[in-house]
Image (cartoon, rainbow, N blue to C red):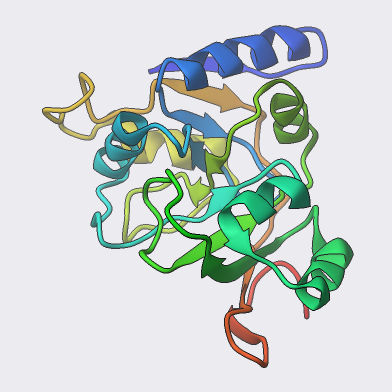
Amino acid sequence: MEVLKVNQKNFKKIINKAIKSVKRGEVIVFPTDTVYGLIADATNKKAVKKLFKIKKRAISKAVPIFVKDIKMAKKFANISKKQEEFLKKVWPGKVTAIFRKKGKIKLFGTAPDTIALRIPKYKLIQDLFKKLNCPLTGTSANISGRPASARIEEVVSQFKNQPPTTFGGGGLPDLVLDSGNLKKALPSTIVDLTKRKPKILRKGAFKI
């Protein structure tokens, strides 16, 4: 598990390293606008499988997906004009929206019929998406059942003493991007848009 400190001087270098890591099918601890997350290429079955093993998450429990923009979101979800108007008000930001999934799409770690999407408002991720045109997993960087965290030491300590797995060479993330302790924040607010009336499933960092 390689840990890299992020600063203004090495910002571009970090982005390029993260791009190569994602393309290799690796799992990265990544800072976001809420808490630290675990990102991987959501179209790469092996990468997503590895993420689930690292996180010790039941494969039946879907993970949210980060997307570049609403145009990318529309590739994977059925989004009405009314829903798009709502998204333009809350994205990029701390809202995860659940939609009906489009047809047969090649994304892994998602539910059979629905998909949870978000566009984080965080420069490091936005710059990553400028050069990496694929959806990314958007789950928090913690062992399942343990709390998500904005404190880098808490995040790293959850993983570093985990026993190895039989997949991908170990139970650790491949890369950790250390941006220090993030501003204290709740996880994203989750809103279900699959019904006629939107329903808040989790109250979080964004008040709706």
